[in-house]
Image 1 (cartoon, one colour):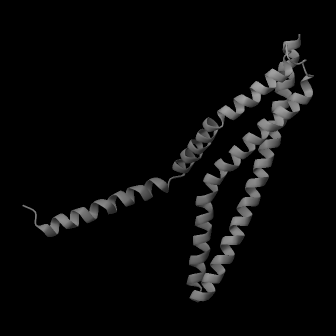
Image 2: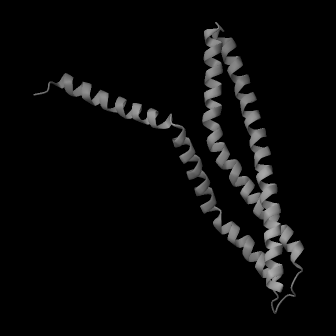
Image 3: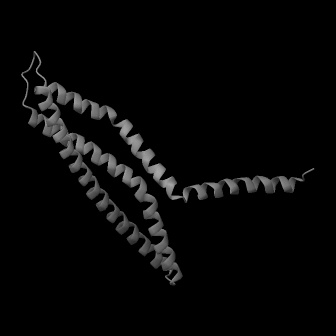
Length: 172
């Protein structure tokens, strides 16, 4: 028969084991890759209606209807491809942000620990921590914007050529 002390120790051990299991899982690279894919999938799924509405607008603009004459393919294709590129650019920035946050935190913690070991005082450490936060966040935001712009431009060019090719195939 267990004493109340032994029962308390087992209930204390259980959360520690769960916490250690959580830390072990989160320290794996494949966990972060899975989180990246999950975030990107959720973003893609949630923006599917926006993508469909852009493509529906393009199809309605290019195809002749009784109420409005057909518009040439390239102006509508440019607009639709820029919108598609923008959507994919924003999605890639959001997904990359999910991966950048853990790396940013690890960098920040590492630098603060090294400053502490070097004998930096508490007040100086607080000031340096604020400076580090601003600098690391600024660098991450700049990188995310550059990568998002690259993805947006790539998707816009690719979307333009696919939409123009699609409309030229339909015209034949």
